[in-house]
Length: 136
Image (cartoon, rainbow, N blue to C red; front, side, top):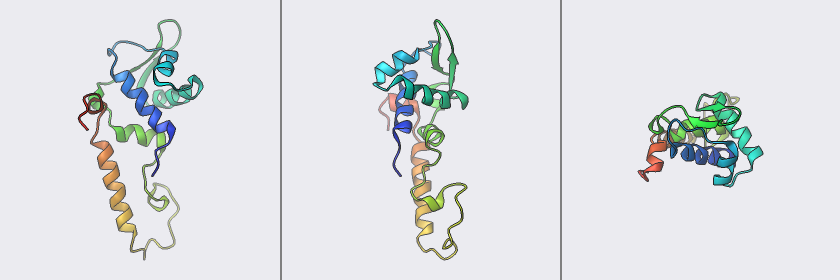
């Protein structure tokens, strides 16, 4: 499993927003500059986060983005699953993947499934609040 730049940037943006006062809308340009992410790429990430209900978005003057829940309500796992689609270590354990012809006789499949659960549990056990407080 390799987390893409999309997933890593989404986490950085969510932490950035979590540092802000809850009522403050932060302009996209300000986030892009603070995180050194291209504004165009950030637009695509924010669109995904907004459509999934992770952030509120307001257009126009005084607009921007903000979290719509407390930082403790967002897990790293939920953000990465949204942006990455899957945190599976191998393709045969991803949701919706076509069944491997060896799945019924594969001696290594249980190991991969256990690794997937460990990864998911690890990321689901860390919130944005934990990242802000270095409680990882």
